[in-house]
Length: 147
Image (tube, rainbow, N blue to C red):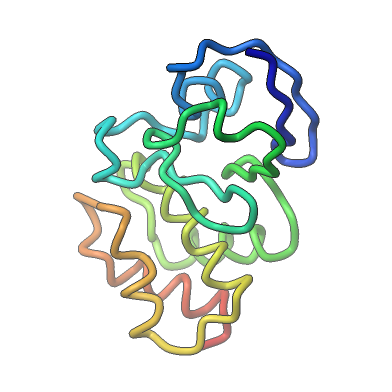
């Protein structure tokens, strides 16, 4: 099936099998920040922004993304740069495996105007981190969001 999707502002028109997962398509297109973690939508390492919402791309068929606007951690704008800088300052990434999913989830939170640490904690709850204990990640998002 032929689909068209815009990833980080770049239009891609590709042929995909109906059973192909979005995570696999994105990686094939070169967006390697999208991690394949659990393939069960549990860990959140594959989180991308699709049509303005965070989604776990291992749980979305590529054909469902036909016509979609998708952002990955390779995307860069002022908000994403603030988040990257805050993650560095707060040592919010250790092994780095969850980082792209955390960044994309945090990006969504900051863009929608998160107002409290509780909202940040709740918003990040869908992405698992096995290294940091989350506090440094929460502090980085607080800084980037101005909370």
